[in-house]
Image (cartoon, rainbow, N blue to C red):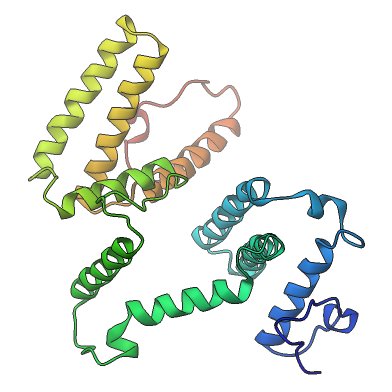
Amino acid sequence: MPLPPEDEPVHDDDLIHDTGGGALRQTARLLAIMARLRDPATGCPWDIDQDFTSIAPYTIEEAYEVADAIARGAHDELEGELGDLLLQTVYHAQIAAEAGLFTFESVARGIADKMVTRHPHVFAEENRDKSADQQSLDWERIKAAERAGKAQAGVLDGVAVGLPALMRAVKLQKRAARVGFDWPDVGDVLDKLVEEAREVAEARDRLGPEELAEEMGDLLFVMANLARHLGVDPEAALRGANAKFTRRFRGIEATPAAPRHPPRAADTGGRGG
């Protein structure tokens, strides 16, 4: 069965219930399902009520569930999690199409164009004989040109506010470092970390909750900077620490009459699993 024209509304029951065909067919099927779910006359009341804002938390959650499946090596779950994440793109695109903003096709076209533009060493005449570092520099140069085209003149423009805080901190620091605003040595970052930790300790006794939160934020920002200088992904490092704590706490729970306080580094060796 041929695919319907792109400008024709898709409400084809045959397409919706068709489990065969390739990627294009199943993509068209998913778009048709979402269009039906959002149909004001025949759709699902819950789906009809949603908008960009109400769906955004689910989008973030699904992205983290993909990352979780990968971190756990749960490849049997990864396929389903990627499907859930794809649905989020389809959902937002359907809402946008209804508002006359953009369509799924324009989303796909836009990212395809971007990938071609950002890989001239693959899709154009540039030499592929480059190091990974040089390719990263070229990528950032192209992104900077794109930001300039969007009137994003500031170095920090375009760093999404909705990113996880540690991830955004590192991205902001990397941007600033490109124009020389950076600690020259990791030792300087460690000194700053000690300074901020001391300020938190002092703030605990003499400042109110808002000031204490600010000092704590400064400390976390420097810790993200330290991770960057050490070549460590702070999000991944904290996920690992969370997993370690969970594993150890469950071990404590399984031990009768176990002490109910966090173990000291000396108790656990301070390292390892």
